[in-house]
Length: 167
Image (cartoon, rainbow, N blue to C red; front, side, top):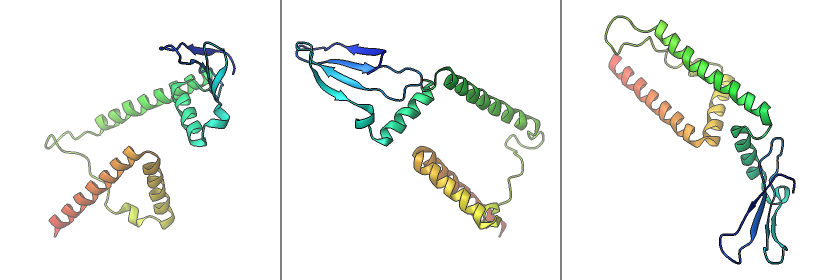
């Protein structure tokens, strides 16, 4: 184990003292040990490289990167740039809408929707890439995948209703 360490005292007599490496920049591992407070013997060890599966390591690294712990101030700078870019996209999106907002007609008037069936008219390779990307996103981010499926279902239903009205 490498410093800095966190020592957790037992809450009840007879339990072990916990010693864990704390998060530090540029550290990819966190080992832990349990020590008997009476004898000082190590009773249990969790070795990050040996005991964590690859999925657990990837999840741990993702959390550390997301929280800005993984690469120190460079990681925090990257997160700041991403957050600033996200705010910029949101503000510019509202600005774009404001410049093109409907000024006449009902309060619910919106711009002309895109033509239906655009995906069917694209090259098969492009369609396959879009569908595979959507499936990958849905697999790795299931909540977003459910919302994508709901969006497609609503869009297809609205298209069918519009087609029935024009007949």
